[in-house]
Length: 219
Image (cartoon, rainbow, N blue to C red):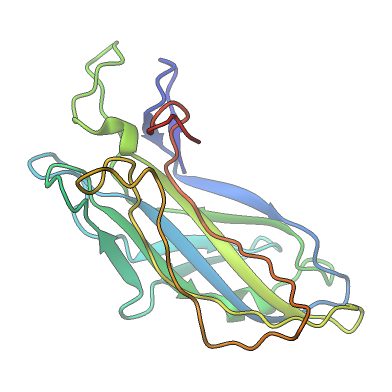
């Protein structure tokens, strides 16, 4: 949702009205169980103009082209602050259950195809006119984006799976803490059982990466 401008800076200074992504890989007999929409972005730093609270409402177009206005569930938005620098831009994310919207609107019987999210209010980077010099101190930290989790069942699938969705939002910076986090964190997940020969896949929604930042530089 937020992209670089023509100056070639790594900082994202253009907030798009919307962005689209293609969902693929669902089998022809897929039946929707649950779908969750996530959107996230930066808020304006103290003393600078721009949104200061999470945007709780977005537009959502499903695969057959039907458009919806989607609101985050009560308590479905979270703001994360940098623990060591009050001038760092706050980050936010919101979640909404869009199962009904997706399940009722396949395209020619399929849920694969293009989905679009728009109307996300976020704070982009600001440059001095005609330069790549930032007005806001942490302009390289600006971003906006979205993701969607689709849980389905299918009679043709040959592997039985347990799916656990852990909902959370973490600001992880290479300079956080007395010695820096090195862009790493640890967490514990629980509440599930595994057999004697378990196999697992972990998927996460990562945002605002910088190619040349970090100690050492990291993506």
